[in-house]
Image 1 (cartoon, one colour):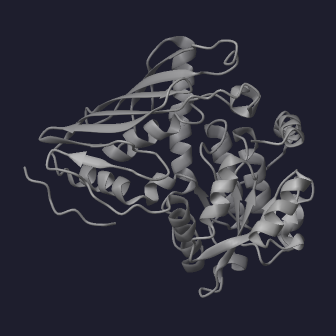
Image 2 (image 1 turned 90 degrees about the vertical axis):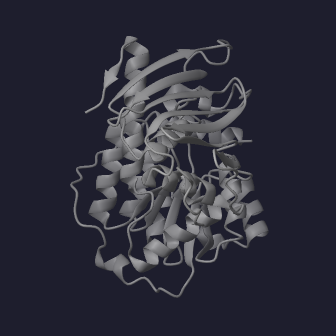
Length: 376
């Protein structure tokens, strides 16, 4: 079969202590939420011509990347920041011209409800804080982007979705790869079965993590490699096949027990899909690796790297997959803003994050039991 035509489609110590303290008390939040229709009257009549204001909650490593990306966006701009570090307040106000009145901390965060210049809140905090601040953002009447993974488990995801539905705001999860052109081509090739039926998916994502004092090494804060880099190969297997797995088997091992004594350092897992396709996936904090390979009945295609911020490179049985290099984060936030302005469904809604966490929950069940876990 010939290929069809390609179409373009370091953290402050005070903040760390605060985050650790806060993450221990999240279970005390009482929700009492029930789902309702999206789009209450406050959000239906957004000015379709104005750039929407985004507030970043958390100004760590990835928050800084998003701050830079917002300098390239067309539909939105950096309107506000939320941080527990006064020095960062001053730095960001001066660097990005953020108004002092649009600067918040974790204690007065709820006052953001009164700020009409902020339309969307992007939660860029440790995993253990995603649920709390997504729900608080929704209750403030703001649309929400929450970084991946969506939450600590599938039940938290359901509560976050319900909170946004009840508040009548939109929720998107920060899966930037869905906005990247070469990845979109991988999705198209699989959906249209350009190379026939998909038989096998292999994917791996990892880097060498050496910061022992980081929250990613702490279980109560949602640390561990599966809860960080592991979502990338899981996502890749799901979007490459276009299917949801029916079973999962997982293994884990630790090379540096002095650092990873609470969470997983390297995890491998295997997925089975309804069509008969299988996936062998790998994630690690021990070594740097980044690739996606798909084998189908009449050919193959791959990305190497497949989840880097830039430089995604594709190849196939019929030759290279050549697509423009873009700022993935800028494209993501621009599309989210446009969906808010036009009241359209999100490309990556909260339900997408929930689907991943259902599988992640099963991966941890398999690690604990040593058995294959069936997924309903």
